[in-house]
Amino acid sequence: MGHSSVERVRGSASRLRRVLPDGTPVYRHDQRPGLPPVWVTRFDTDSLPTELPSNHRHAHDFLVLVYIEEGDGSFVAGGTERPLRAGLVHAVPPGQVVDVAAVAELAHSYGWSVAFTPDAVPALASVSPLTWTHHPLLALFAPGAGQGRVAEADRARWSAWLAELAEELADPDRLGARDAIAALLTRVLVAAARLVPKPPATPDPLVQRVFDQIEAVFREPVSAADIARALGYTPGHLTTVVRQRTGRPLLEWLTERRMTEVRRLLRETELPLDVVAARTGLRDATYLVRRFRRRYGITPRRWRRGQRALP
Image 1 (tube, rainbow, N blue to C red):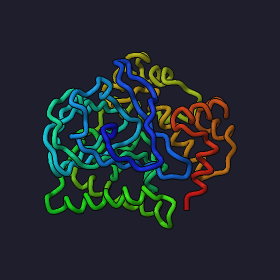
Image 2: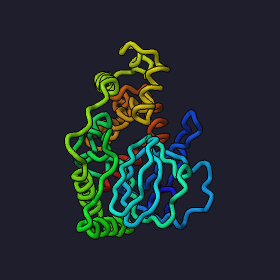
Image 3: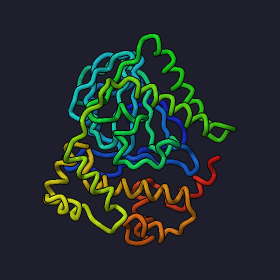
């Protein structure tokens, strides 16, 4: 949804990260050092071309929350058609394929899209990506959730929060802006989580086994093939199953877990890069730099300096 925008905050740029086996592009956001990893879009589907290009089918490697102020029609996320109706909030987790071109009825829909990485919220900054779907703030992103409806009496408040978040992001260097951005995003996530019906969906047993194994060994120099064999599966089969059930392949989950720990060590310690690499299952500092830059569009040292610049 974010790629159909007509307004963007400064400090963000979408870049192709990889391409799925079926040709679907997966985008990442590059960010300027020192700026919060949050990007807000005010979108209007009336601005979309009449015939959408085939590459409008896409996925992201970050989290996206979409709030519909007024809407008609639908779009497809993760193979499920989702309505565009006033008051609906849609959560799109990393790796989930969004297909706007698959649905014709898109006219007269507008609202807000908030893209972010967990580093934007202090309570999520060091949380393992393997447990994101269990975290209270990300309840709407959990399997079986995905969307909720804001009561009509609360819709003006949602619009005001997102407009204020966009305003703060437009000038993130002013006094208190970073704290305000984190606080506003947290407030939106809390409100979104409260839209989730109880109880939460039961975790997928196989995916949970995979995540438990990754958590146990990610600090060691193991590969996705090692994890698959430890669980009694061939690497190709387990990679396919994990991608089908989570939207991301096995190797990407292993890499994401390592990169979360890398960011934590860069943010919270002064350890040199070779030590950080050794503690996160990566070969050496050179390999760490290459993987980090490919993932985030910035070197670990620049990212660390940017974190130090944050109040």
